[in-house]
Length: 292
Image (cartoon, rainbow, N blue to C red; front, side):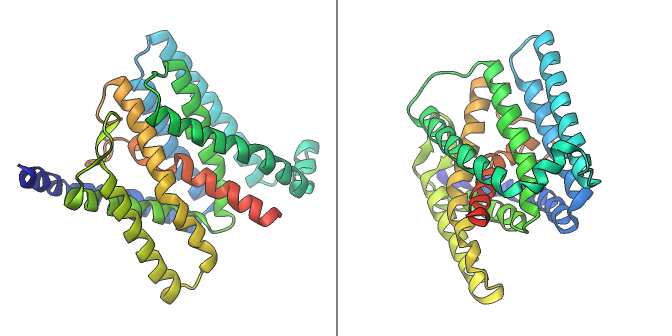
């Protein structure tokens, strides 16, 4: 029986791998060219994810319209901000003040946001493992709007300025693949049975170990970048938390996947869950490093 389940999982591997490659290549192209290309890909991916969530929520038509308008306004404001920065409209007084006082404002924001982010992370761990309470639709949407759209989009744009985004995305990609393969081969103990029955402790642990080995070899012999080890070290943990949080949300809604745009993976929301904590956290830590 176990062999049949394992063979069935591996039968999905080609389809899953092709989707992952296309998704990953789009990210790599966007990161390589940067600028407006990265902006377009980022907004496209997160807009699809927002639309998927709105469709999934068990709310009435009026509430869904409110969510759609809110998401549209948020994305519109983000795009306007992006255009202001892209065309370097720094003559406006508030923008000129922000750019000229970046170090002071950045230091303050780092000290303010980083503790809040850590608190959010701890609350998420509590919600996943120690609490059986449900999250109502409105709080789901607000948290998604803020933590799954605004913060990741801003983080993606900022992090690419320092060329750390590629390492972050590729590490997520490698870990997801290794965790899936090792889970199929060696998985016996469910990591969070009530949330994600298919995610195993062995898959996460051995997947993380293989990810570390791959990047230790790469950073030691191919591209000597010891300063990037910390990114690889924290990503398996943060990516797993993001994945479990999205799994809990889907379980409460009563669906298996957020959509079907990526065969073998589900929807865009299913792929972006790993970015939920990883990209913002790497951004915040790196901001602290360069400012202090």
